[in-house]
Image (cartoon, rainbow, N blue to C red; front, side, top):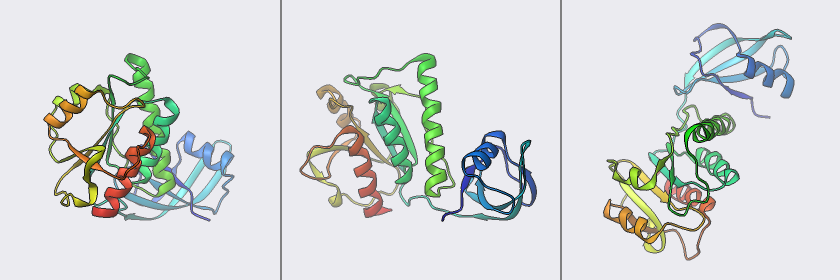
Length: 239
């Protein structure tokens, strides 16, 4: 059985005792049923892992003894930004969770012309915070010690107008097979359209901004599958 992992937003001391925040304490005691003497791992997003043992478990909360601290790198060797067009909430949650497991560095949600979901204002901020929570949970599960960045939602044309240097890939069944691209020396950007695909003018704009058609296979992939397939292939080829 794997040792439970908990993300702690506040800084964690390198030694001594540490009182778990309420949410982590509740999950450890009420959900996982951990008791005094059980081992767990804490991480704060800086790349470090803290090996701990529960020293006290009471209704008022849980404290742990920090046994050791080590910087453990489980990041991909390729810095990939997934530019994912907005899709249904369930699909977006799936994309965020699995992209984190596959080593993505950043997930940029964009609103495309054919995006079924439209988010703005407070509703958009709530979804962004929800995705960050999903990303944290995925890191706890998969062993990553660095939380991928999830910036604010922007319109696709606005994002394309920004300066983003690196290998830029637009998935297409008529593109160049991914394995024929040279290994990237800097960032990789993977642009994924919504359920209905990108509009022709969006594809044209992306290509004018340096995106190159890349082929993963002969089949058309769903929006919630395409980016994940690309991440897995990129990590296998160049990670």
